[in-house]
Length: 354
Image (tube, rainbow, N blue to C red; front, side, top):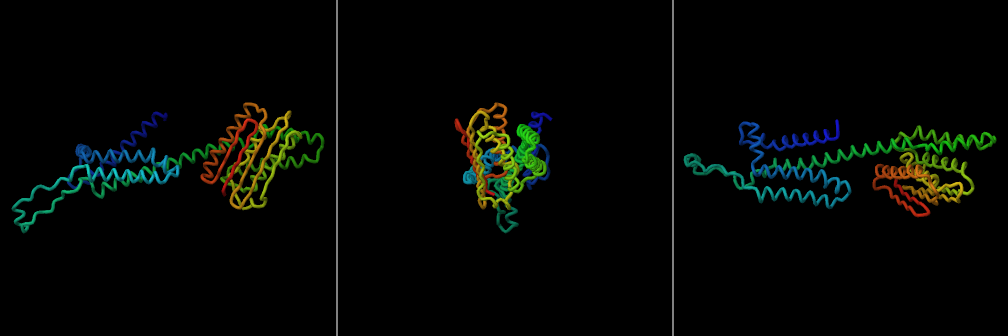
């Protein structure tokens, strides 16, 4: 089904649902002994019914397209409450002050008055025709259904975005350039029969195991994420010259044992530093600091800028943007990220509350 066809189907569904919903008073009207198609449309076309129908439709789409997504979901609660009060006020003004009063019963027959002791039957006039419990009930149903439908679609969209970002990260867990360079380093160590070769193989094996076994989980032990970062940095040291100054610090070690974090949430910022800040012909400086506290984690990554190939630069920007999306989805209101993109240096500061 094409996009145009889906939109047309959505419009048809909305029209049918509105016709059924707005026809309910006609079916429940005690004045009518029978219901026909002509009778339903006649009931809908009455002035008071028509004005209330237009108001209900306006309230629904106002909530659906503006009040809920732009106010409620953005945590702007005072304006959202004001919008609810405003809609209800308009509803009351329409029904109490503008619409004509309810039709009264015919004048009483004198013979009936005589038989009834001279008392006339009570009139049903004096109230707006549609100002009833059922009319108020329809208003509440419209308000509640717009709220529920908007939240449901927001939830589905969030799940879809989360799935897409997870897939993107699964494809980029092990950078091919990094893997190729590491294998070359291992090959060089084996040729020289270096004692460091087994340790390098163990580190790379641990990274691969983490990528395969932990990536499909929602949250992992923070200690495993930090171990992955440490192994990544150590393998980068192996292939880089002394011109690259790498400072890696963890403060509060030991506090990560009982904490969990989304996998591969921190490593993109570390990878970014090595992609932007390493050049074999220039002096490079990379600083990576992780501060662990009782309830939060702070990551600071800093690097000098050196020449980067356009294809690597593009991939790095994509990784940073995707990480921002993951943070918004997984830690809403529980993270603060600051990116400083200067002419000669680049810095990222991230704080996450567990």
